[in-house]
Image 1 (cartoon, rainbow, N blue to C red):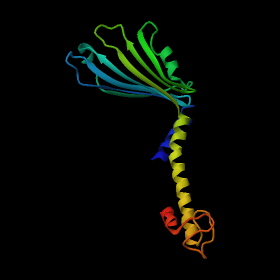
Image 2: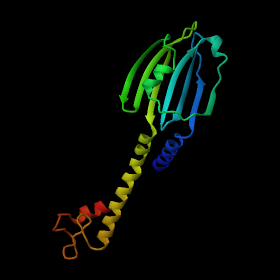
Image 3: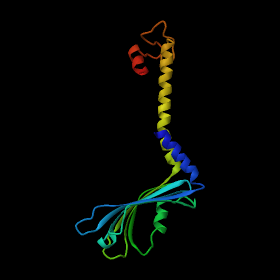
Length: 198
């Protein structure tokens, strides 16, 4: 699974240099006692070798909530450049809005921002946004770690089994035909040898 995710992340990384993607979905929740509906939404872009996701929780009054329906969307956009999370906060909403933002993580091209926005609409509560920006190369590296670790472990186990069948120590490859119960070179006993080869 991790290897498939590595291939997918790498393909998306290369693709984002030529073709950008915009995606989003909206899911309405059960109304509260005041009739307001909490709407959970997620939207983002994949472009310029990176991905950013905006997860939002919005609360709409009853008159607006009745018009909301679950929706999914996807469209192609211009590739553009990689957008950091703090850059999204500068252009995504108008500066005159009542908003508070906090940076949870800022490191190189990684970013996690939390923000509350109050729109000038009557009876509409404040929105909560969690914005994540990650370069796709880091996801490729992350997903590649597990296949590499499995491959290294498999090669070590295979080497130990081959050494054992040849009458050698699985740890240091010393010839054990004269002393099969104990390796005089590294001190490996037969019990440790069997446990290591399983």
